[in-house]
Length: 177
Image (tube, rainbow, N blue to C red):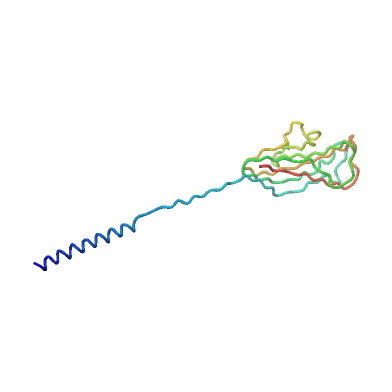
């Protein structure tokens, strides 16, 4: 009988130990979580590329009084991620003979794919003599990749011909976003 009681006692002890070990294993099987957050700001941006200089006048252009300098347009590609505006400044003469008083200088941009060359934005000087006065001063863009033709013209004061010589002009496209 003692042996039987000892066997029962050992069985009870083993069952208790197994229960404790099982409970201990369950404690290690619990889960917890951590949340990893990501944040940041994506800013609007614009960039210019594929910039091609224009030709003011070639030697084969016929000169006439008044409008001169409708040579080959320059071009620039603009990529804007987000909303922005594109403007063009009046050209600045960087070299060449002096113009007479009252000379007009202007620049404007058109979509390179537009066969009608409708001005999308014009500088203040362009709106006085070279494009319709109601032409916009800026072109709105939003998530666009577009190539613009950049045109310029010069009208010497009092409809005088340009003095023979080498002329250089530059204009600036600005992307505001």
